[in-house]
Length: 305
Image 1 (cartoon, rainbow, N blue to C red):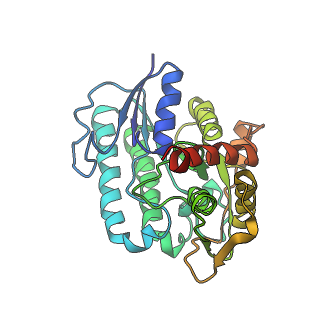
Image 2: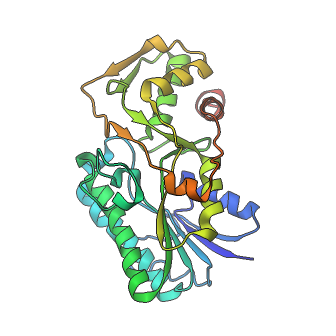
C-alpha cells in the first residue's frame, strides 16, 4: 500500500484529493493548519512515516482582491511555507515524489500559457507577489532535483470547481461567488452586481475531472511542470447565463460594475502537453457541473439554513 501525505489536505482540492486517494486504498495522512504551522521551521517533523508521495497544496491566499492588500504578507508567509515543506522533504522524505501545485496567474498576461513560459515575463501586477512565490516553489523544486536528485511534479490547474467548497470566512473564487450572488437574489432578492464588464474569460475544470487527470498522469511524468485545464473557456456572462438557467433566475437582473477590480482579462491554459499524455480529455459538461455545484450550494446556504 502506497503511503501519501497531503499537505494542505483541508482545503477544497485537498479534501477531495484525500477522499479519492483513500477510495483508491492509499494510506493517507492529511495535514491542515491545525495540524502544523508551516511558517514554523520543522513543524512537519512529527510526521515521520516514509511516504511515497508528498502532495504540497498549502498556501496562504484568498480569491478576489485579497492579493492586492496582502502582498508583503503573502511573500513572507508563502516563502516560509514552501521552505518548510521542501526542507522537510529533503531531510526526511528524499525518496518521495513531491507533487506541488502551481497557479495559472504565474503566467504573464498575453503569454501562450504554455509550460515552457511559466517563468517568463511578469505576472499580472495585482497578483504579482503570490504568483512569484509559486514560481519560486517551482525554481526550488528544480534546484533540489539538480543538486540532490529529488523527484517532483508541478501541476498548474485552471479554476477548479464543484460541490463542497468553503463558503464562510474567505473571499470566494469567481465561480462560487457568482453562484452565491445569483442564489442570494433568488432567495433574498439581493441585487446581483458583478465586478467588471462580464467579458473576462475564464476556464473551469470540474473537481473530479482534475483529480482523474492528475492521478492518471502522476506515475508517468516526473521532474516536469504540467497544465491541467478544461481546454475550453467562456466569458463571465456565459457562466452567469448557465447559472441563472439552472437556478431559475432571469439573467437580465445581473448588473456589471465596470469600474471594479477584474483581475486578468483572460486566463486560459495551454493543454497540449496534457493531451500528448491523455489524447482524450474527459470533461464534465459545463451545465452538469454547474448544476451539481448550484444544487449543493443552494442546500448549504439556503435550504438547510
